[in-house]
Image 1 (cartoon, chains in turn blue, green, red, yellow):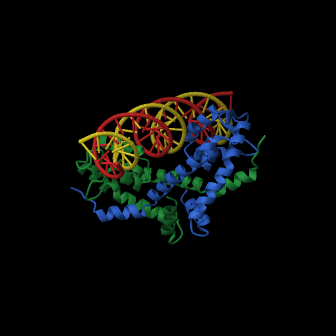
Image 2 (image 1 turned 90 degrees about the vertical axis):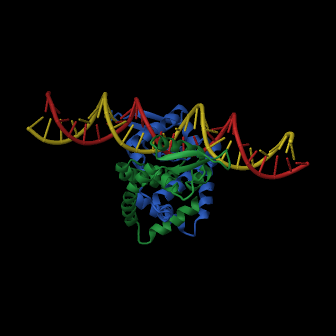
Image 3 (image 1 turned 120 degrees about the vertical axis):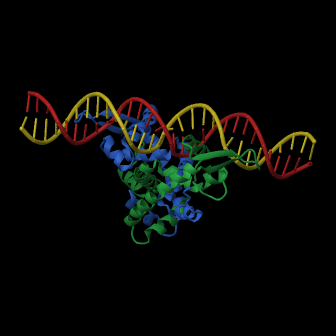
Length: 145
Length: 145
DNA sequence: TCCATTTCTATTGATATCAATCTATTTAGT
DNA sequence: ACTAAATAGATTGATATCAATAGAAATGGA
């Protein structure tokens, strides 16, 4: 029988960047989800809606790329936001294959209510990192995506 | 109407650690999923099965905590692995509320086949980071979870 | 113009994620 | 021993994630 030594398991567990990033992603998602719950948003919905707060409504492709998420995931993520009346999806008159995403006034209001929560939560986790670690961490993460 | 300035949107987009970590998590997950596909595993299944490769079969709670994942997520994640005959879930004789998780010989074989893929993939992403960035990044991520 | 290719998005099916809730079992206080 | 509280998992329901596939519209070459 093929056996992987326990020491190898410990090595993989301690060094695997994928595992470390997934763990941190789950922990941070829970943290922000909890904090944002009073505003009625999850962390992903907050990020998505914030990325739609632009002068010109963007098409789906660039938004999915910005969030590093599959386009089908974006389609699915928009559904509950449309149902709640926070986001509208309209046909692009210049390219009828495409859709344009915009926030409704209600969506903007929800986002505005969530912003101070984001600020305080972010400041809190920022404090958990060594001095200046925040910028460094962002840089490292960006190199991976 | 409540309006968040576009400049604030850009600030949140550029500084939000939650967003950066989610993005990196999605990108790394895709990378490892693609690499591990020939072995028949996803990145999450690899991490989970590797964490079960111990001298003594662990109960579910500690495994969920190690992976920073909800216990119900672990229950769900075990299902396909049980169906494939790679993991067995047995009642803990010392505490009949609990379950013990173990790899089958087939599971160990799959894991052994996946290990070299993990090694080369990990070395590749390690090279994307500045010298010594790997250890630093792990430390920063650990501070968040 | 016509047609092949490309681009943009939707649908389906499988797994992943967590909150809320439930059952069974153990533990602790009396 | 009895009972209340705590603990370990399972189930349900909602959203998240991506691969594979399909459809519609735009683009480019002949």
